Amino acid sequence: MTANWFEAKVKYMKVNEDGREKKVNEAYLLDAVSYTEAESRITHEMESVISGDYYISSLKKSNITELVPSEDENDDRWYKAKVNIIDADEVSGKEKSTGQYYLVAASDINRALQNLEKSLATFVVPYEIASIADTQFMDVFPYFSDEEEQIPENLKPLEEGEKEMEY
Image: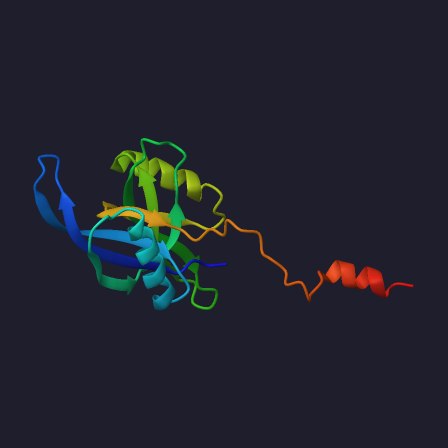
């Protein structure tokens, strides 16, 4: 299932190391089905991080199509990469490229390039990395279902129903 990424900006008062309050506007990326779910998810995520008042100053659909996470704890920044997928038109014989945007976790831009190339290593179509740039995203919230899907009591899994029908 393809992810629908949304960019959310959250404004709140943050206390600096020296004890002074400063108004900040931080960007987050999250996966959601709709704007309503995106607003609900970012609200839920911010309640666990921010103790005071906050509000969502912006919520928009992102052009990012893929996320490239990293297992390395040093990869704490997010880089946006544009990858052009090259396709040949069978009728005219001309090449055309389609841009896709990736969000890559890395510690620096060189590591972002390495992580991106590692994730693209399985591609069977030609591609070119057009650009990589640093982003302001503080965190990314992909959609993961921690709970097993619960089957209502009045329904049975298909396999069990078929076994009962056999004589």
